[in-house]
Image (cartoon, rainbow, N blue to C red; front, side, top):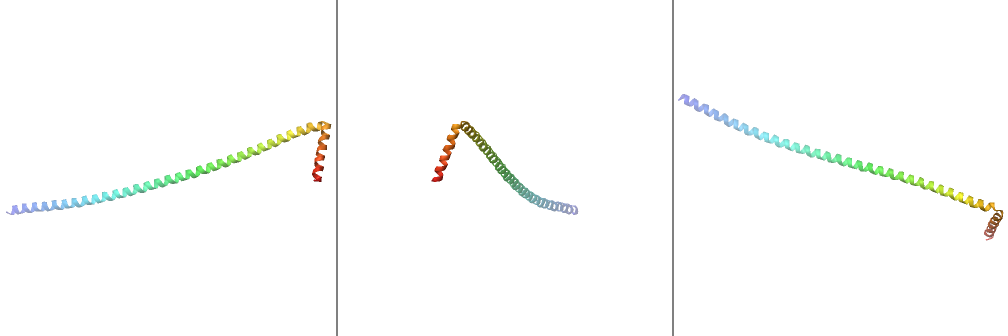
Length: 134
């Protein structure tokens, strides 16, 4: 009977150890699931942060590009305005020069003819005396 008792005790010990191993496996599995859940949560948080950083960088780059484009447009508009003003000044100088040349030719033609010259002088003197007496 002793051997049956020993056998029962061995079986009982084996069953107890199996129950303990099963409980330990369940505990470890629970820990693993908890660790996996925590790892997923951390991963999701890191991905969210990475997306936010990406969006921030894209936003800053877009704003910077828009600012730079505005500056370039403003400089181009200033340059266009300067060139336009310079062209207008040059055109005014040319018109003035042409006007002077035309006036010189007209006056020169009028003054070459002595009779016409005398008439021109007389006309201007009459004009001046009328303005002075008025």
